[in-house]
Amino acid sequence: MPTDVLDRIRVNSHVPRHVAVIMDGNGRWASRRGLPRHAGHWEGMKAVREAVEAACAAGVEILTLFAFSTENWKRPRSEIDALMALLRAYAEKERERLARTGVEARVLGEVDRLDPPSREAVRRIEERTRGGSVLRLNLMVSYGAREELVRAARTLAAQARDGRLDPESIDARTLERALFTAGLPDPDLLIRTSGEFRISNFMLWQLAYTELYIASAYWPDFTREDFYAAILDYQRRERRFGRVTAG
Ligand code: IPE
Ligand code: IPE
Ligand code: MG
Image (tube, rainbow, N blue to C red; front, top):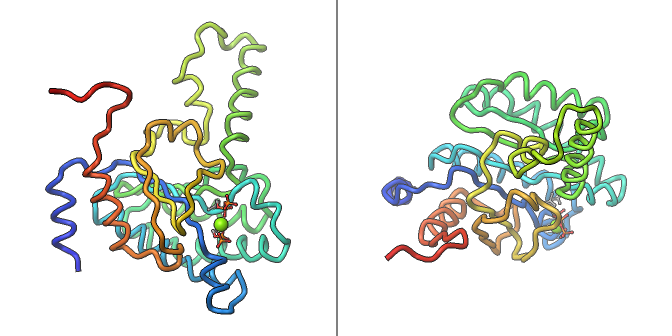
């Protein structure tokens, strides 16, 4: 595979700059096989590798993966522990490969809520991959869009209180600079796997005009071909941003 698919993607010219993914369905993937949920999460690591490689090959600049939500803290302790162990394992195993292939990894979210070994793993993967210029990979961990917006409000309020920000000057860009995604363009394409049609508190601000793509595959079964299929589908869309079609 899939030079022809990649050719088709490139020929269409407007490759999405920023692709975000809600990686969903790990638990159901495992249950279907009579396996514990954490087996699905571990299997999902392969799909992460595929998505990263596919994004690089297709010419995507930014890949943002929703790995653990604020609400996921309400899951059983054993599952949270498994997900944190997976984060550490991913950072350990993939760090070198990512650095070698020019991927700059960042972990965005309330990282201070992670246990110290996981925070250290985050620090190490970010440090090792800093400066990678092929792909920016955002791993959204302990991330919730409402919390992100609340934090931004708090930051701006504190700046205003201290006389460093004029409330009248606050506009969309001021707020964007206070989000975890400061400095990044909004996602062009959002993929959610496992056939669920919801946003689940993901990037509520940033997704305002993002094209949505729901894939039926559970995340561990999501292949690079599925990733390319999502991009090809995106390339057939007409993005209007509230305007009328030209001509
Ligand atoms: C996605 O898979 C991974 C996380 C949310 C951490 P799930 O764990 O949500 O799997 P399902 O949706 O229950 O199948
Ligand atoms: C969203 O999936 C969060 C991540 C993929 C990390 P969930 O499985 O937590 O979302 P809901 O509960 O189905 O909405
Ligand atoms: Mg789920």
